[in-house]
Image 1 (cartoon, one colour):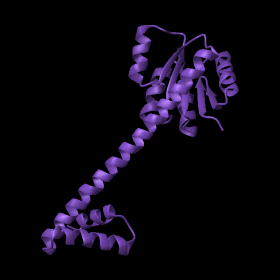
Image 2: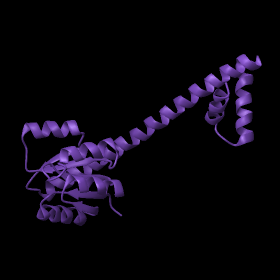
Image 3: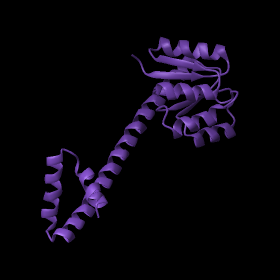
Image 4: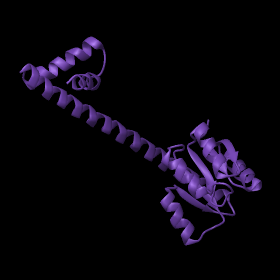
Length: 189
């Protein structure tokens, strides 16, 4: 299955044209929306690789929808499709954190490369975000373990190595992480 995409544009003909271009290129179009609100809902349902949004749509415009999608991590990337090429729209698009900007009329030779780049950048950012989260979790674990070791050293009058081994033994006996045991040790004091 190809990369998954959601399309949102208030013009049915544009949605149909974009869908045809994407599907002919091997992408999977998960759904279409005629406004930004429905685009956000589709992204909540499917978490696509990319969402293509028109800027000017009823109820919730593409810029505001892209901010919601980005902030809630509902898609790996957002690409704006619009008839507006003015600097103010481009600046707003940059602030909204979109991956790209395609000006109508949409042509296959301009859309497909932008979609490929946007998906690749989205995957890259997603990977970096996961690595950052993992590093934060490891740092939090280390901090908790260090605090728990310090507490055991003080309470039990043992060396740092002995305190570490105590935590490690409890972890092995209880079959849980050192972070969990450290939290429990700290909660009890």
